Length: 215
Ligand SMILES: Nc1ncnc2c1ncn2[C@@H]1O[C@H](COP(=O)(O)OP(=O)(O)O)[C@@H](O)[C@H]1O
Ligand SMILES: [Mg+2]
Image (cartoon, rainbow, N blue to C red; front, side):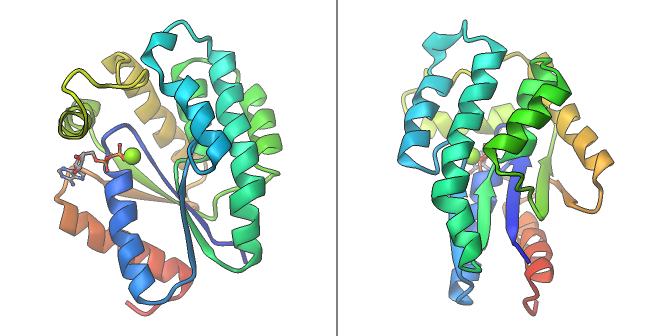
């Protein structure tokens, strides 16, 4: 059975933080892992990400955005994810196909059937086996993301998505919650307003249970 575990949620919801923490614990337990992210999980994807996140590209149309994310995913699935799953590795992926529904579908308004088709081709029909959805109010997520960016880069740094409006980010959040409603068995909803350690324990518990580790 494939073990593709995805981390989803709005900007600043703690996906990368929690993926790093749970990876450390899983590595200690000698779980064979691929730790990766979209769109930058491959060299080609990183270059595509450069086009996608560049805030000078504020005029990029939604279709271009969707195709570019799917182009990065096509490469990522074939170059990294499928080979890892074929070696029985657990794959932890920071964002995947649900993000295309939430961002380019729910928030940008692209047709769901169109997204279904490009998602399906780009991912070779691969669907996540377990998805952790980090949920919190967008104001809090964006505040955290801004603080993170200020620490990492110069204080004026923020990418094309972080510069979108609260209305946009609320549509993303609602989009994710809607997908979860349609597929409740695949999702674990994580209340991301809590402290890092509490969330870390819950994330570990969900993943350990899913891959059959003792907790
Ligand atoms: N539970 C939490 N409480 C407070 N701050 C958090 C929490 N989780 C993460 N952070 C901080 O918020 C910022 C955004 O977290 P990050 O993991 O980068 O989010 P994402 O990958 O979802 O955009 C980081 O600076 C991180 O240290
Ligand atoms: Mg992140």
